[in-house]
Amino acid sequence: MNNVKVLFFSTFRDRVGEKSVEMEIPWGISVLNFKVLLGEKYPSLLDSLDFILVAVNKDYVFDEDIIPDGAEIAVFPPVSGGSDWPTIFSITNDELDLNKILEKITLPTTGASCFFTGMVRGETSRGDDHSTDHLEYEAYKPMAESKMQQVAIEIREQWSSVEGIAIIQRIGKLMPGTPTVLIACTAGHRDTGVFEAARYGIDRLKQIVPIFKKEIGPDGEEWVEGDYLPKAGE
Image (cartoon, rainbow, N blue to C red):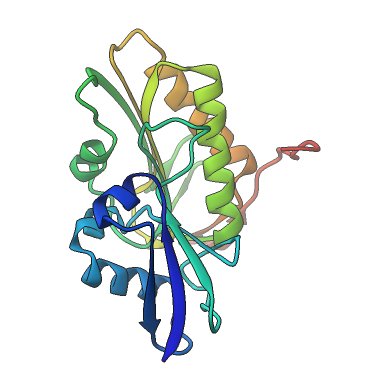
């Protein structure tokens, strides 16, 4: 077994009731499976496993990464520029549960939410008319999740009244009519920026988050490429 030290921060420290613990975990365990073990050991964290952040030896790690021997593991909720407001960002193969997502970004002060969801079109009438059998999405996941966090920070910098933010992209094979991406913002009132913030979020995701799609139809398949070139510092 691999002996590791686990550090808890922010609300997770309050839920667990400890600043740090020693744990034994299997050799070669992935970060994803470590999260599962953490949820089994601390049921109070179960509802946070979808968006929990993990750092190993002071560097962010992601679900597919392997935890090394004797690691120091830090566990904390999404960082959002010092704010305690909820932030979710995720690359997932799972269906999008809008009610569950809304619940996670709703506070007692929330009175408005704005959701944008992109969907797979079966028929496209803009530009060259064509039919689509399905889309296949893939992502450079570690960088994509980091850039999603950046988009959330940019939203908060421009709309300080926004409370909760969710940025979620599905990957894999997706059929027409299936939601592929979600941007959601909540706030105390509808006139405090939630519409504009959600629009900004999807536009920025399309610009800087490394997500790629292949369109498959009756006439063959083709990778769909954009034309935006990120600037230095983005």
